[in-house]
Image (cartoon, rainbow over all chains, first blue to last red; front, side, top):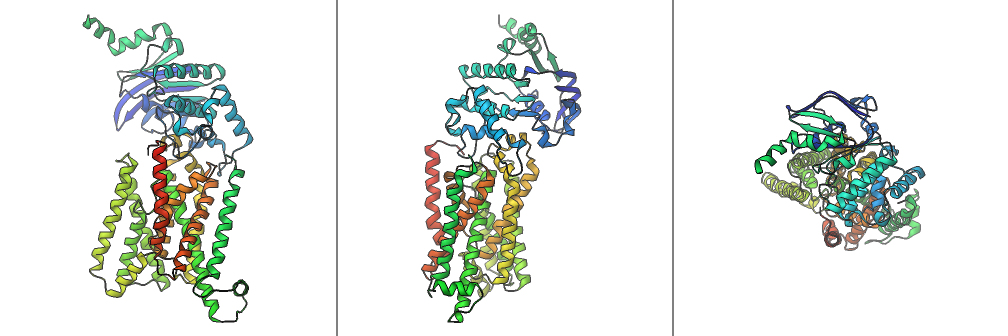
Length: 242
Length: 336
């Protein structure tokens, strides 16, 4: 579904990280790495918004450069950690933005568009607040709407850039459950960056780890935590403290 | 949500514009009868031959008000969405000031609007001034993420260009200075039929071109990052926005002076009233709401026998609307 081949990503000419051969199939995958290792840059690059890389990024067996921006929007959707809407849009209006890539130049809403939105409201149980104004919703509710918007976009891949960064403990838990639910009921790849690694063995089937300028795919949930701690040098720090 | 729910608002605006248009033809220092006006408009002759001149001047003036009000309002709408700030508008951001500087250079340099070439020269100068300010703003916006700070920068451009114009006065003679000062008060009056043709052609074409921005504007309410992720080409969009809003505001400024408040108050009001979130619906409603406000303001100016300047009237109507919107925004705790 998503593949990297001999990929090297740079930022202003500086080497950030490289990946040799990585294939990711559908399901939930976490993207882990310390601050500044390039998680957001990787997500941006997959979206086609950062051209500073060599090698290949393939989505559905086509390189991302071969897509028009408007067509790539039918393959990949994204959720950022914080969102604000300019205007008095309701949650439902925001969900409808996900249909934009499929609409004509006058952004005419079709019956199919509305059905798609209804379907996602049901799937993610958004009825309670979907008709309230977006700006008055809580951060947790806003983030659920933005995830809903990404699902409405009807793409094979959903990227989330630290989606839980501004959420409390309960909302974080709920967010993970929602992502699980989406992965179970659709055939999508859900790739989210996070710093909260302890919960990952219960949620993900694989982890993308960026460390020491290298991107690797971890596929054994039992070894997730130990591998991440090892590569961050955390075990050593704990020993020193004792 | 659906287009249908905004039809009442749209109809009220169209009817309102039509009624004001007729009132502007009929009423004034010389009141006219409907039959006479109708006669003259359909090419007939009225009892008094001077009346056809009066009608022509009133007709031109009303058409200018309709187009100028619409253009300023649409330009303001697009800028508000692009800068994600309800206080943005061609006036506040200094775009009208940029146009004014261009106009000042030409007028104070001694070229009058009378000739066709003079006309074209002033338009070009105004457009260059407006677009220069917009480019400067977008350049500064790279370093300033806070959009309130950006507005302050826009206001400073306004003061700066005003100061530059004052410096230009040093070299200008009395007639040119007077011409410029009168122009600066703002007016929909005094556009002759040839000028009206150029004016109408530019405004109508550009307003129609704004429909190219329907999808980008719909997406930009969620911010540039989200807009890019739903397939909007940000570079092209930014270019279109600069060119369309810059030229619209500049053309109006050249012919009518720096008309304030319409560009910022109208989009704010419409955003509260309109149900649809689709700019294919919002753009035409904002246009006619701008026409309506401009015609109303001009009607008041004419009822005062042209003794009140246009900008005085738009400020009296517009400023309270803007304050009301700010209060409303703070109540809802919306950050901008």
